[in-house]
Length: 383
Ligand SMILES: Cc1ncc(COP(=O)(O)O)c(C=O)c1O
Image (cartoon, rainbow, N blue to C red; front, top):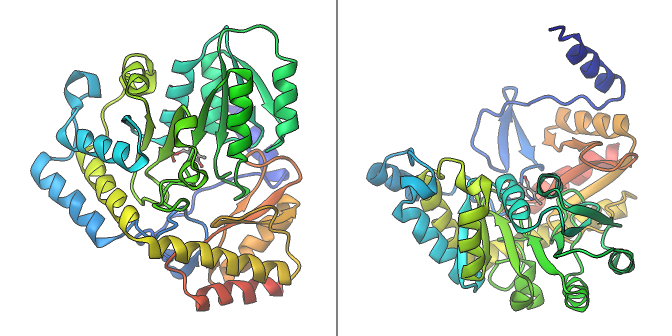
């Protein structure tokens, strides 16, 4: 088989400044990391609370390895459900104040597995245009009809309901914090529309879990909408600093997913050490309000500084702070120049973001000091 199309495709990406490659990090995930042998200040992880290398989490994982070994050895339904999985699920249900919780091996797998289990050919999914790729892929996999509505536009969502033909089930799905824009979904309006038009609501709290809400459980908690959101999905890989994902909701939802969700059923269970680490992260998140306050205060400080220097931070209100350049090459060059000065911020380009909205996606951590933020602001001002 002639594979020259691979090279041609990559050259096309290069010529449009859309080629992507991996950067190797030779240090733990923290605010300072070692890239290409040089220590740089990290402004692009999702490790918002700085928990990825937290001693308590590392200890919980090591203890679990010593007690339970590393691999889980089987899928959850065969013989891979270990005490650490059950403990984490109980903890998550308590933390999110839901009847049940179910852990998936990753957020990508949770979204694809939940959506494709809940809806099918005779159903319609209403999905925000800026929802994460894993939601989009879940909808494709489900074969349901897709109605994409303009980002956070409730008139567009209502319009989509009005023009929607007959169907069996309706599902609205939205990120609560949008991963590339750092803005939040109008959740109150969404649940109202859902109740008016008889739709289920599913939210993805990947970037809100650990960051928003009085106890850090997410936007649903902040808005007091726990009993109005049917499917609460989130990840353990971002603010929690671990790996994996959860769905929280009624017990019947969890039982249904155990029986229908292919990405839950047909994969090896998460290693018990990951579950033990995540349990510890949930405890820390619940107890440590100060980290949450600090990361939000840091984000406000950075946004104010950027706006003062004339940058467009879009509608961000969370630790995700986009800096809009529009042009991919300009965003790439900005990222390169910042890295030369010891500040690591990735350029995000299409297809991850819509055409003509290339940006730097700066993310702030609770462990960044004012000095770190000022260094970032001084370097970017030079651009
Ligand atoms: C909104 C959102 N949902 C889901 C995911 C997937 O989660 P995971 O990295 O655990 O697969 C991500 C990020 O990767 C995300 O940003």
